Length: 372
Image 1 (cartoon, helix red, strand yellow):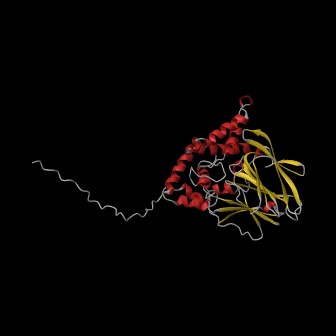
Image 2: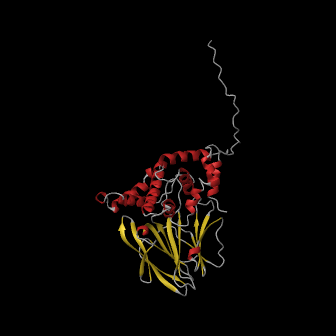
Image 3: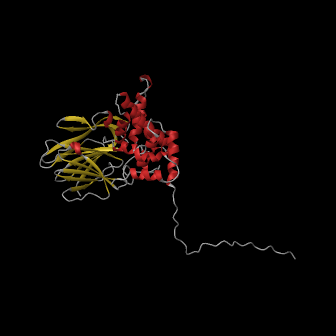
């Protein structure tokens, strides 16, 4: 009689059925930092140091290539909007001999197609495009004889001119922050990056993008209009018209060509015009205009963030524009507030907040997020 082989048994201790608690899996942030460093070293197309670009990527996306800011076209590790991709194509085109230049209509259409493609969020491609755009801005300022071309380029890139964005990047390689150049092992570098981003209903009408006129102010008021001209692909040149004068949104026509523009007339007792859209900076740029009591003329406060403004606080002597950060940007706080005191245009402030400002003394307007 044939002897049957004994069946082997597994003596390992089985997980009890009742043990259904999830197990915490630790993620090695420093490993991701090493990956980003290797990507930047291989794909940086600018004169800016590796460490500053690393810090910039962390501020923009927290190293997440799928990061997304509501109401924005930003994509990829460097959170590039459509507008800087178009601007890069335009600047590269201008650098060619005149006979070799292509029509802007074609350039902009190709830029939009590239931005919408899966290739654009490829980490290497996104870094190449973002740093190439940054270098194009550096070249523009250098050719104009600017002594601090890199710093000025970052002001253009960020869309505000207070220099904070670049100074935070510089902290990655100077002073105490030079530790980011130290050993690749451990999480010390991640702590540095985390420290860098730390910071101690009314009627609304919309337009996209057509001529719109708002009566700004209160008892004393003035009509201010948004007008557009010179269409190229999906972009227009945008102007403010007041007192019969037509002025480009941001001083020059070069900086005032935009896309995805949202114009709103907001407020009841004190009315304001608020504009946001994609222009030449790698942020949604915009401004609010009102005519406050006691002011001799309409007053304006500019802003630039990755998302559109969410709330507008209006008071006779003060204006506050509040953004939700969605967890990205130069701060870990959930909100950023731009504050303007009437009569002090040079003293506008930007502050990160852990909670919304108090509504006491203000009319608070919840702003639209999508142009329609």
